[in-house]
Length: 74
Image (cartoon, rainbow, N blue to C red):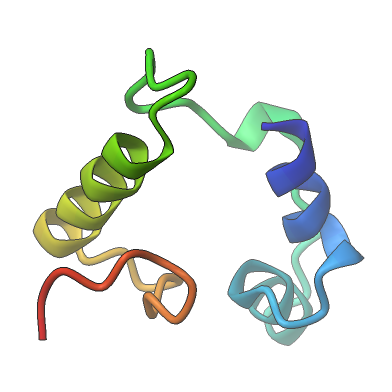
């Protein structure tokens, strides 16, 4: 989790969270703005990616364009 938040806090310049924050004059993302919505996938990367893809499909978060997620749907 710390690695992904670091990416979104500015380390990954391609992060849509970083781009959104800069475009809308938001402060850098901090740990308080994140929550784990599903867990217990340690050692099960594929299951985690499928769960993430299903969540993205259902919720359609505006900052996720799925360019780096498991592509299950067209």
